[in-house]
Image (cartoon, rainbow, N blue to C red; front, side, top):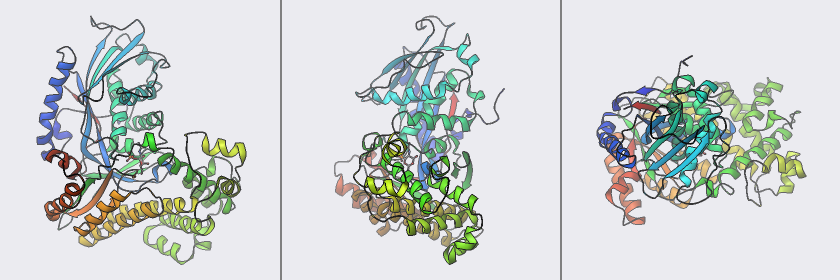
Length: 532
Ligand code: NG1
């Protein structure tokens, strides 16, 4: 039975890119077909799968806690040109009962890799620990992740693929927080789906979930924003993505205004590799939010403090208000009631929890012993609860700061979305959107401690150059910044960042390298398959 919402099949580049994007990309798509033919014995690809990167406009480090985020796809993307050989073709059959996958990259430093797998189980597909073929892990985890979702008759079909040849071409700078890794896993899953003729059998929500699960297999305790943004984006819209109670996506148009506004992305060019720094940065933050959840639940007197109901800050909020439905009115106080009147119940609950975290959680760094007391998880229970999923390294844990960031950031997302749907869409709406972006940055820098000197410098320069709001985007510790700018100011704004940051810090950069690091962007379309 075909599903109602499959990954779309498109037949024209204008279904994917803006008119300017089509003009820029046409040459690249043509070149990819000829590069494929050179790489794979003069043959032509059967299809090209595409998955974009994303810029997160607001809602940082809260997807893995279960709160909604607000990203938009960008035109930079991963393309995979693919040829599928089936058992009835001649010449290319792998050992009986095995699939062979050959994956190459147009960037020479990513070496070609070949792997084989059984059709009914994928145990023999091992991940590589090091070397220039390690990038292929993304494809392998996508294969392993999708495999269990493929119906048995697809895996057992007489026309199943025997060999899949893939040539990858990416324009998203790696480790720059524009989601190149999620685009890679998402695009890989789509390649396998299409190669097995199953595109219409698995819907986009399941594909997003597969891509999220797959990415965790490469060792990052990732949230889910990037894969969902890559799959569901549509041109001219940002996405309000919710993860609770289940994954759902609401495309939201950014306000039209006079004067017009747009977003500019500026890369610090400081590389931030989550796989390497995870134990002290990203994965540590995930664990600190989990510790904060248990500690807050205990401090709030939630009875079921050991089960799933208080595992994340999101679940603590849900459980608390389920147990105490009148708490907002009875215990909220003026600030919470103001938020209730202005932005509704969900926003008021977030404000309530932000204030509760501020009041109840111990400020500053806490030792393991202190966290054991605060959470009630001690000894082996502590190890099992907080240290068993991904390795982390820390002497102290900051529960108060992380929790206050999470609740306040989740509230800013609701405020941002609410401004986008408001009637009046003049410059004052954009001024308010900009203020929310800037307070997000302040919180990320001071409470979440995921900024860095280069991010701070670029954001200060942007503000001095006329940005209405600026923040880091993605995980931080390097990578990109995003700025809200009046369209008419863009040329002068770009020139100012170029002079003040790139020419000073990286004097040798070539023109195309600067253009790759610094560009304005409109929300672009999502992942798809292009039938050649
Ligand atoms: P980056 O590093 O920008 O791709 C990461 C996570 C997101 C989210 C942000 C922080 C992955 C693949 N992505 O984004 O899910 O948690 O950090 O908001 O881990």
